[in-house]
Image 1 (cartoon, helix red, strand yellow):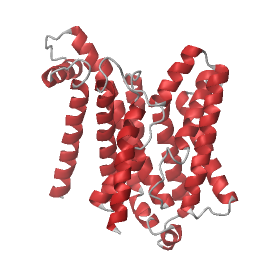
Image 2: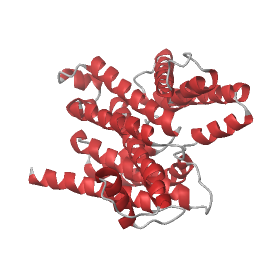
Image 3: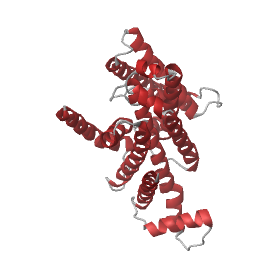
Image 4: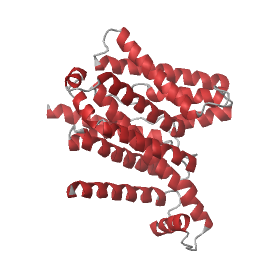
Length: 338
């Protein structure tokens, strides 16, 4: 029990250090002491004399970016663990299975065409799109007569992803002005520039709730490691758990996509790295993946703001530039291990 408590405290300390670094590092460097003073002023009204510009940058810009990046990274990594465990395929993640693409299409429908007459939010539109995309992928896999072949499910996911990406491009071309098209395309590549406190109040609870639901079903996810039939023989209500956890993955992905756009490789690479370090037990794998995803996306956000002076790179570009080589190394390492 003491060891577990130490691990939890270390995880929180690591996340706190990463958040402080994400706030302090940027186009203009801000001392960590200034960051702590801003937090003390805003939370406890400490009354430290500070430059209003530094205070605004820390509280309204960088802190919200860091918190949303952490929530988004944790949520996407958790979704990757869910999908890889349920489908028993190491390549499964929201990006490759078309869930992110479907969520993007749903969000663009709401943003450009006003679907729902103002009653449907971007997150709800993204959720409907994510569910539709996964339903299409499942239908394609079943129609091909290979729903149990997880390799075929990945191929169906790639096809569904391309379809929804094409629909999104068509909608932007047909209905968006040049200014709207530029903003949406930058957002689709992964953009944290516009996030503010409302995005924090949405993304953080959703990421924590998704992780909590998965931890509650961690034993069932362990059973799915040996296949759905083995899980059923162990008393797991297979259909109900699959429906709940895939719905959870779709919801978390949809919320994150509606806030920051489509970001790849987080849900693919981070669970792999955590699995290599800690094994396949979901009691440790889920929180480790969530922490790893949060740290990875905070670091990617810092790089997106500092790699090119005076210019911000879409964070999805950074995750792909880092994630693709890392994933290639993991594949080579797994092959060598065999």
